[in-house]
Length: 417
Image (cartoon, rainbow, N blue to C red):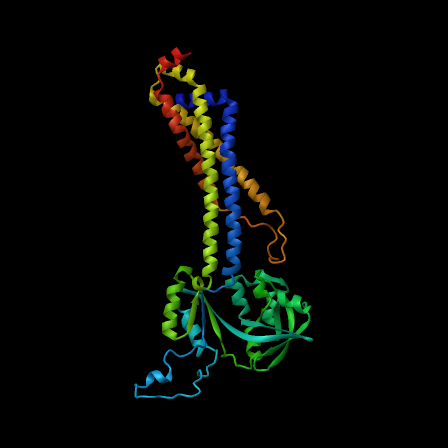
């Protein structure tokens, strides 16, 4: 088989019918370009929404949950008739994790654990003049939070260094600051449930993008939180664990609960509804993207099918001069692949151009102040999939018309003329 001759004839056919060739190539171009633009934008948007949750959610949240005992006093007694128990109350327990520093040291040696970060959580009232708001203050290891949870990305005013270095300072939730008309440099009083009142300096504002959280939570360094509660540096109420492999979170959480008798909430349990929404959004994205590629494939098939009918005389001449059915078949398949290759490359360029244009488009929203442009996921695999589908779709689109062309009888064609 002379592939040089076959490709030369295929090229000649395409050039003599430039209009049909251009239309077929543009069908591939717009199909692939639309696919890349849509999937890059939608997955970028989904990634941004995922990051809003995952960047602020530990893989495992370990804490001492105050809950009723599984066995009540009556359960320890044998049935000996009428038993009366008066004023049964829950056992007084502290929220702190017993021997937390030793537990942190143990977790740091676990091969599955990437980081174990201590946290002190305090229920407080924010007080500014006559305004009082209930909320939560998180005492954190600021530097570790920045390194492992992108904490600094959500600071809209001020710096994390100020929070780490300035004693008696607070990073106030943006929703709280708005409700209480406070700003950086002001002071706010915090009252704990035990009646301790502290005055803290606002060194920055924090905005996670989740309004309900920004209206109640704030951050301070862990030492300030311990002083706020009147506790020592041994006082830790929770440990946030980040794993090397997030998919192991459920099994490791169950193991930690059994081993230490603490409550361990894994990221899958904490965000079950969000994960369902993410799955549905991804399903819709890929379904629409596949539909775009499929429509482009049918357009290519129709154009190539019409091209063969217009080339009947050429087919008859080729067969009459000694070309076999296989040769004719390969000529038209080659035409389809050439169209797919040209259209696919142009589609990649179109998709990249549109994606970059969207990526530079300003995205101004008060809910996400750290996001300045629309999110785009420039993933190489999308471009490889687009080009691969362009070649595959054009090959299939040209296969049936090519087989039809190979089976045509030149005598019938000439006689029909």
